[in-house]
Length: 467
Image (tube, rainbow, N blue to C red; front, top):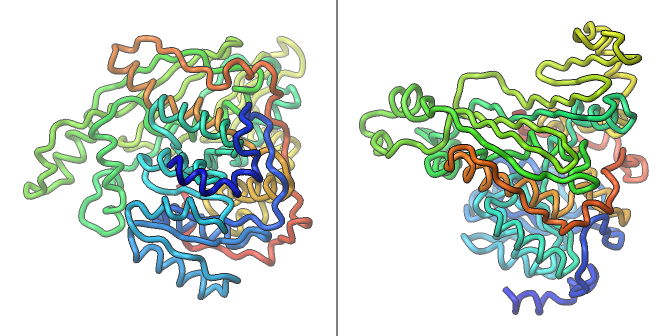
């Protein structure tokens, strides 16, 4: 890897190779054209290829997957869509290393299974590429430190692709917080509650075979293996790593009936399936984690992917002046102290007025285009627009390698806490104290006109994911 990094030195120099230092608020020089290589073009990666192909000033230059059919399918889609270039193809278990050394690529976009996220991102940084990595971007504390140190050493950004930061309600909460509507925030809640029982077993059809790795994760691990959808938007609103920091956590796991007995092994698998006799899955049905920040904010985070429950990310923000939550959307705010207006949720019409009045400008300006394309209600496309906008205009990416590390390390730390009887576990300070010197994430936007993008120039993406 070191030799490859030296070979790619000419690419690294454009990012400040070898200078070292913090990556907070770090921006590369503006790109006239952002050249992107995709690593992992299964279901999630294919949706990303479709979205990014519609963004002006971004050129898809390479596609990589261990499955040749996945690469060919995406190449055909691009050709049928009359895409302006023919991306180079890389096929094989370790073909991503070749792409990371490809001199005509600036950015790698990683959408592989979880266990490959960190190795691919690290190899990308060593190859001189900006690394955009799907969630969760690393699975251990050591993996997080490796990404932090590589990003700092080579002065190359590494961003976790957390799409939920760009959801309408999450952006609304951010805007309300920046305008002081919550007062002093004292408690927040997030979750990833998503019934994935038909995906996790990977049984009996071609689409589910893609998710065998997810079954393996649930068999082997406790804790919260998918913390970022609920946690990262809260951290952006609270200013974690930007004036505050996650200090410690305590994690508790429930019983594990759903995957082991009630649905999966007892009712879903046939007697001829060898997994019928696998050891019990390690994953608890519900994992609840409590955090404390250095500034004293409490956070509750939940994870459940195997119970018959409606989808829920909670997205609750509570402060000294009011509260807001999602699933369903509701809010309540005081006009003055003790006016008791926040003792009950606002009426549907009052809550709708808050939603309209305080709509985040990014959502207001981009949602028409984003929702037309699709992808989790449009937030996937907004996420891709933002990193493209930042790179084209020499601005810092919305999330840096410290945000990635602070929220990805939760996988290992929650498992440690659960296995030790819910003992408190400290969370590393990946910024090494610099969180005290950085301002919270602001109210950002993009200029669609400057990008040359409007509702007529995009189309609905049939591969877009919904939940």
